[in-house]
Length: 477
Figure (tube, one colour):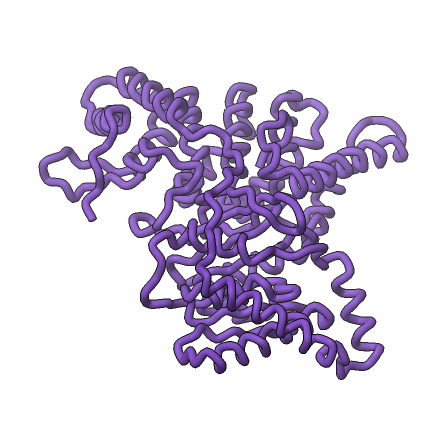
């Protein structure tokens, strides 16, 4: 499908970018062009997202009737399944392991139907891939996915035996209903009781859903890692989560919805595997102008050669830092652009040097880091640079650093903690912050603890507020 013609603003930005790279004039003129391009990107970047309410999907009469029949039959099957063949010791162990990760509600079938209609608006005459519900509880989401006829398999994975029994009742009732209606091509429905963080749990999935409202930080990190590993070679995958985004560096956030679940309205984060040029949806943080700049190439023989990477290299290595850094900050507002930006070795050299520069340089460097860590892919890139992370933490603990720079870096670190267990950073933070000040040891420990407590509070606030009130000052993604 041919790409639609760019808007006037997008075409102007593209032409300006080409003139910057091809200009034989002075660096002053090229810096002027880069400053103008930065202004265009800043004004065209999408505003902070707010959850939207999609048009509810009305299930077909057949789907409604089957859903009611299956649920009614499952209610009669359930009592026999609640007699578990497990020892008291095993039950107690599972109860302890899942106490802080249980859900307190369920996602209705109507919500799943609406989600699938948003992501697959034209239906599918050839179902492919599988739907997997991570933490499937009583099993309703996977049942709704099976009834949608959009997948060749619908599966739920649940660790708690009690909830798994409810799902197994649905599975048995579904199978009986499928046989009774003689539906040989019906989507298989399968529920498993076990650990969803073991290898291959999500292998082959094209849609992963999780009502992860009460997942703790450690479980979120483990599930994120498993999804990244299992879906590393899979294209066109959606991961939809409730209440918070998981740390998925290879995915873009493509929509944010407000839908009914757990007997109330919750925020749903719709993430798509990042595949430039083939993705079905655009990232919410991406503008048309940004995509035009990023996806332009040298294939059009009637246009001067242009390359996104060359523009970044110019901003990093040749431009005036007071012009180049604001440009990088502007493009870091886009999640796909942050992903490409993080691949430049020169970026990390520039950031490392900025931390040792004068106040304006440090301020710009810290602002760029803040923009990058707004996205999972940026957080992953930063944490992979151990020297830079160590320098950031040391600067936070240095009383001589400017408060504005330290504030930016505190926000950066709290964002990094958003994706990883606090224990991963505790030693570094204690070492950098625990010895601050010139008073006695008790005063120094208290200063370090207060900052650690503030960072932990940032993490807690991100968990519960992210996506609901993103515009509140001091609370950022």
